[in-house]
Length: 51
Image 1 (cartoon, rainbow, N blue to C red):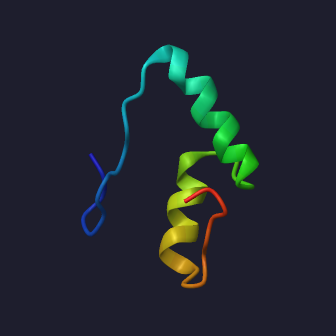
Image 2: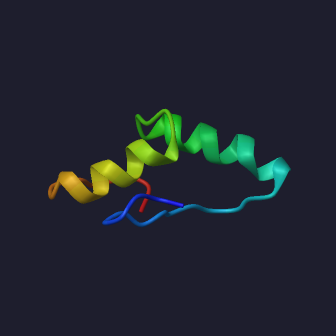
């Protein structure tokens, strides 16, 4: 359980889709989902060519 003042965010994906997700994140310049979430929150000019 996250500490007070925090919310936990996650996603469940099929095992065979996990590799696809990780590849897409790498294409966008991220190593993991947490980096993407932080960019969305802290970089107001964040955009993706793949929207």
